Length: 263
Image (cartoon, rainbow, N blue to C red):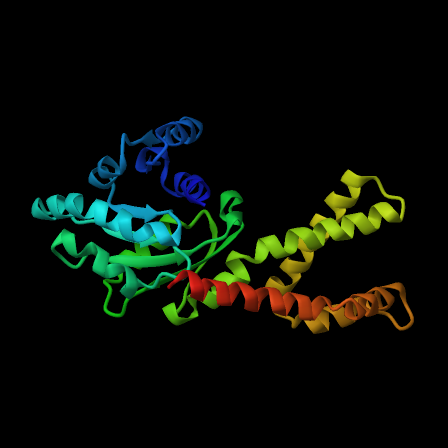
């Protein structure tokens, strides 16, 4: 996810405004070479050089990372070089993370985002939230940094776990469906790569119809289903197979897991 956001940031700001850090230095260097940006020798160097710090580690690693960064943040604060931190950790609220920044010695601006992997091609969906009273400058700057990533929307932090279950996890729910449609096409005699391409293009177009027309998905579905036709026969098969219930169960399972990760 960090690499996907780095690509979006380079598109929006230019490579000279992006610096990368990874616990495996070779990974940061390889991506930096690809994108034309800089790679830091370590996290402390990245914090010193950058103003907005995107933290792309697993939820259970976030506490140790913040503690490790706190001395550098404190030294930067002493010379009027304050930083803004942006967490991508699923389930970890701003309030749960803030105690781990006690070593910084000041109230470090801390925001949360939840992107999905589609940001890598500028088609992502990212949620952004900040604590009440946060200076508007900070979320506005994050929106600018992510402007080439796709759609960015501010939401209440209380909605973040549910958002993640729908839009963050969602691509992994859609890919098997596209693959399954292609499998059906192969069973009907289509070449595999053609069936995949046509199913993916169809899914992209259908999603665009929902967004661009503002019509309810049910109404759009009805517009395709002629009486006694092949489409309604297929829709009936999906209903018998429990497509809707499976999709709902997937989102709820992911939402519950997000809550568990936060603990």
